[in-house]
Length: 220
Ligand code: BG6
Ligand code: MG
Image 1 (cartoon, rainbow, N blue to C red):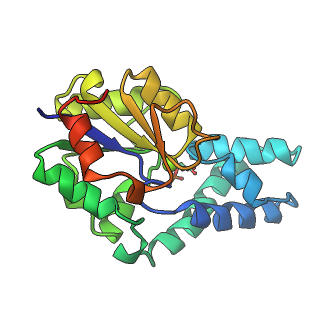
Image 2 (cartoon, rainbow, N blue to C red; image 1 turned 180 degrees about the horizontal axis):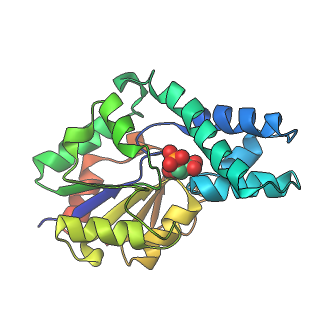
């Protein structure tokens, strides 16, 4: 049996939310808008454009289109400054063990991320060669919870959606996986990700035995 395993990036493979937080906070504060960790949580899985729209909504601010465009570019420049310093030590616990196990089992592996920075990040942490396909923010026209990103991933892996399994840390991402008719595995809090078929705190809780059962369809 060969399945397609699709990994979200931010919050699943690496904890980049802390860098998004620093970059968005700098931008928001520069506009006189408060930005807390609680607000940052609400931007998980959300596209860059939509994130800035939300921050402006929270601050009750409207700005001209040119300023919007230049602020997005500035935010990303700031974010890339942090990304540049990343290395393999930032890979989240047991991600490599899971990737290696799936490779040994000859499973197909794709990335399915909203980020336009996905490739440079995978290169920085030295994981890019683990992926047979990469679908990121540059490849989609509709953001999660739309299933587009995962459906493209399935297609590139030559798999039917029902033979794919998605690892996601965001609510929008879990909803996208469900809408794609894939098995959704939430990485994070059960209360937040209750729409997922399975939820684990992190990859240390996902055993090779569990993955083997998914592959051989002993569990669905
Ligand atoms: C998602 C992150 O993976 O990618 C969001 O969870 C982020 O926080 C989005 O806004 C877009 O990322 P980027 O790197 O293209 O700004
Ligand atoms: Mg994520």
